[in-house]
Image: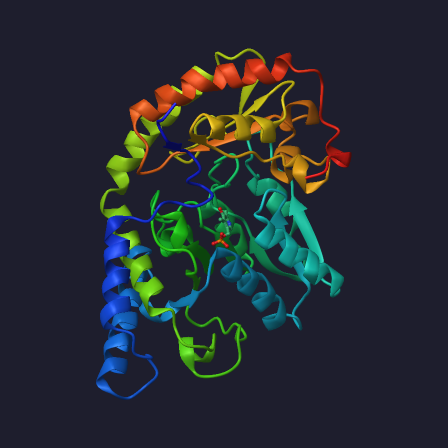
Length: 391
Ligand SMILES: *Cc1c(COP(=O)(O)O)cnc(C)c1O
């Protein structure tokens, strides 16, 4: 088949034309170093200031609460390790969830090796964490709670406002990884009640290589990179001016269409879900309703997710799986594990994540090919010697 269907938007999005245009102009005309004195530097600095203002407006923050980083992983690392350092004399206990992105989990594991205590909240089988379980885990020495706003694998959206209220009542800092929600559903920091928030440009039509951390004013995180005075002395090194302005353009463009786009994607997603669930021994993972407009994740009995993704790719459809046998481990996705999907199913996980580029024809194509792929894989003799398979 010749049709190309990109259904991996949760991994990264194609850049929006507004973003490409903003970057091209900036790279061509505004290459000055923002730290300098002459007019080209002033021009670059003005672009930085403007982008910071526009991005902060998009999430209801002040410009001086936005710190640019190079991606979501960097922002997550800074938030977790920065608060740990800032508060180390008040306590060394951090609460997060068992379904966070590895940028959070591995930052926490690093802190664990430095003597911090980490509690990973469990979720129910839809991927929701409960307010009660959070309340039960808070201790005298809890310094930070970090809960992702929406999960990148199964799409479940957490009740952040209610969770952050628990933190606020006890004067504990609250961070949310909002990489999957910014630009897709409303994200207003004061409504959410968060102190720190992570975003990444390439998840909403911006370029790779740029992200941001929102740090509520008054919170004095230690610098991420020591050196010159960039980002108010918090992250030294010349700013990625073009990427920053590309991120601002992308965010404004996606927010301008957010409501209609969310409705459109929800329609496509729900059609995809009902079509895919006609395949025998398949199930939807994540929450039935509190989920991102664009994400539909499934698990299929008796197939290997990675093989399905490769076969789909051969048929022009790009999707992804949570279970990667090629990494040499039998472990399925930690997220599917945490929400209680049994290994026999979670090894056959396939995520379709829809975005601006997708149309009804794309859904038709997926629904045409996926049953064939599943059937072919099921007709093969049992494989999955994952542990020994060579790449
Ligand atoms: C993609 C993603 C990240 C990491 O962001 P990068 O910009 O790819 O480093 C973190 N958290 C979530 C929920 C994500 O989807």
